[in-house]
Image (tube, rainbow, N blue to C red):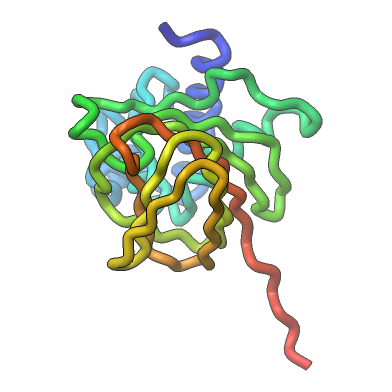
Length: 199
């Protein structure tokens, strides 16, 4: 059963999506056309009554010219900067059986970040299927907290047990799955690379 905190976070996420959609001058029907998601589903998401999968959230974010991580970061920024969120985090729809799950269809816990895009997040999943590649403008540092994860960067698959790290710059095609069929937990530190000044 969802907790009050989880419901509040779903409402914050939905409210942010609605605000961005209106800011871009889009109707729900237009967002549906751009994202490939149904109008009723998007309405439920905006009202906090449905939680999009990570893939669906990526489609919504792309349609709104932002990223799914920035949408999650809004939840953390809504709280106090010196507090961690509750254990429930932001729960996204896992859907299907374990073998049918894809990248990050588990739970996301967003920590307080900075307005410049530095955003730490914790993702827990048990998907055994890679699913679609993700590409986002932010650079990413990942630390495997528990379990064994497997990341595929372009065509190269890398197995990462607990305690290992990886970094990749923005624009890198990547996707994750369990490396041993069991749950894994990753701490992501995301941020935008600082702009370089020409001499």
